[in-house]
Length: 170
Image 1 (cartoon, rainbow, N blue to C red):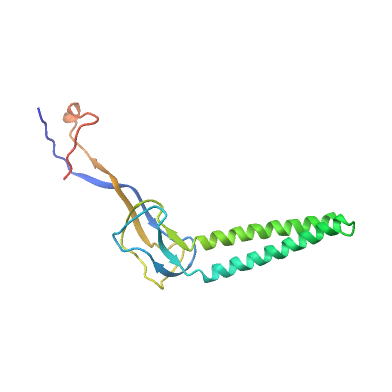
Image 2 (image 1 turned 90 degrees about the vertical axis):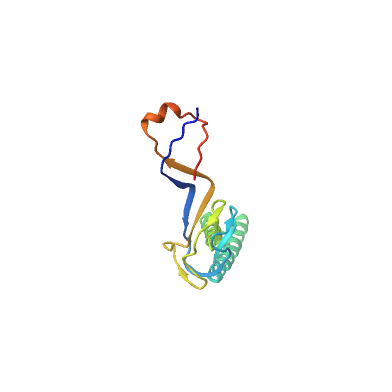
């Protein structure tokens, strides 16, 4: 016997997120069309990265300088002309320069906003040339496969509903 129960429900995505930049700057490129399906990791927005590239070069130069100072301090200490404190100070500066370089790379990497999961991108809230900050909403991305269907049925029908039953959604 086929029992049919009508109910009003709501469709909701399993995954949905509002994209926001992690760095401030101007939008240099938008790499999608609104409503387009994108794959995980696909670049969606690019922030002008000239300043971030310059900071990366600066961090690389500081690391090269700190590494040279450490090598010289180590050589002087080996020849008994330097102090342990000077070598340790140079080593500390070299390690801080490495950390600054890693940070500069992360900031540069954050100039490209990528899809966190595969899905459909909604309407873009910004255009090329727009100044954005971490509080700026860029667009929504929604995973529509699969989706949740939330609905209620009368309690009197519960004995007839079982896990694995087929549900028609219109």
